[in-house]
Length: 179
Image 1 (cartoon, helix red, strand yellow):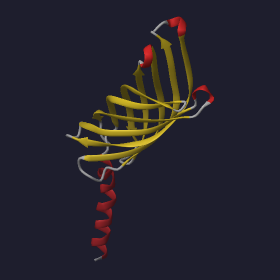
Image 2 (image 1 turned 30 degrees about the vertical axis):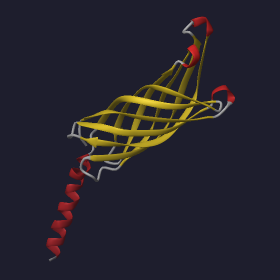
Image 3 (image 1 turned 90 degrees about the vertical axis):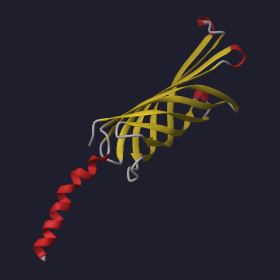
Image 4 (image 1 turned 180 degrees about the vertical axis):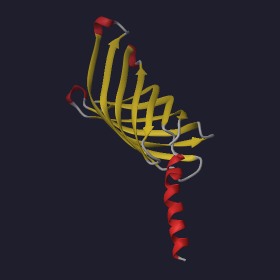
């Protein structure tokens, strides 16, 4: 009986690396993004793109680099906001085709506005940015998924004021490699 328990324990121990192979090494995401920007108490809808590259350390933890661009033209003024951030991502991979995740990102935000696109009348500012949020990926197969939703709360400090922004995006995820 003791030998059977030892064999079962050995088999379970040796199978741990196989259980960790559920996560891809890399995931590359690109998609449409919508942002409700807070301009000193005035909400401005912006539309754009979101691009992210993630590396998974194991099946539940990894790191991500995220880049976004959002644009609008209220009253003839060109407004754009770009973010570049990095941080940890926590994923839950226990359900076969669904991967929910949460992330916290720190980085920079570049905002600019220009009247009718004229270079001489534009203002640009780069400042610290913080975002926290999460999303849900629906896997088609082991290499492709659809990010049904990613929602983030983005804090920016432009003009010496705190802006509380909301961002949502959706698009395609490509999984590369395997752990």
